[in-house]
Amino acid sequence: MPEHAPILQLIGVTVLAAAAVVWAGVLLRLLRRAGLVAGAAGARRRTVPLPAVPSQTLVGPPRESVELTPAEQDAFAGLVRHLANG
Image 1 (cartoon, rainbow, N blue to C red):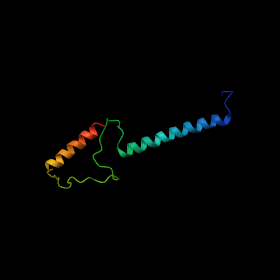
Image 2 (cartoon, helix red, strand yellow):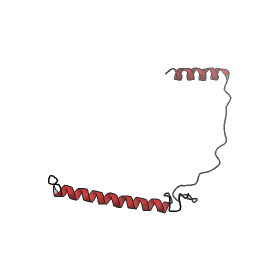
Image 3 (tube, one colour):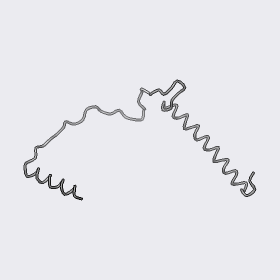
Image 4 (cartoon, one colour):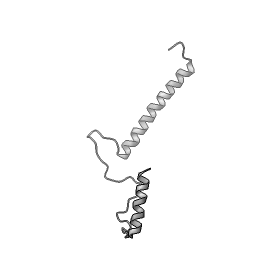
């Protein structure tokens, strides 16, 4: 035991080290349960989606487009030049 370190400081370091080991163990267990850590047989991907993440829809709104008049095209080109110059 070092002479210059008070006993409370040594106890604090010991408690923090034990808490870090417990935290790492719990984290590893949760990751294994979720299927995010490689097992003994190698990396396996989970095919079932996580229950908390909602599924995405594959269809969206229809694509819209509008034809610009020549004056609008010139105004847009001027805006782009203005923004490109700073």
